Image (cartoon, rainbow, N blue to C red; front, top):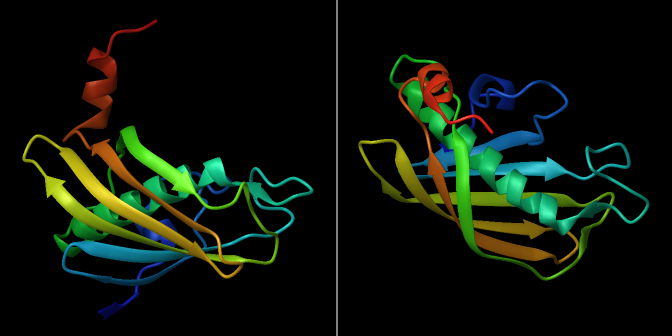
Length: 153
């Protein structure tokens, strides 16, 4: 395991408020681990905590951090990517409790030359919540060109 020597901001191309990961805690060949501290003022938080469906975005941002890490290690900068879908996102609780810390691990399952990828993802919290999913993602070589060519509504 490699020590995390990158900040979330260096790896994930999200604006401040929408950057939901707290820190990168480790990475290795084909995987990355991150944490999220759930606070009363966390994005999407209400009086019960953060709804567990937000865990899907935490997992997606951990994949973005993994992709950003790959770019940084090859002298590039993080690129925009897209969550295409998920299979079997499950969570053992409806909310992530305020004061808990979530530990996320994403493992690369498949990365094709055309930018399509599949990751197996797990989320465990300090309050015994567990969640998991397989996420399908896409990272085009040039996101601006891809979005320009995409059909509009």
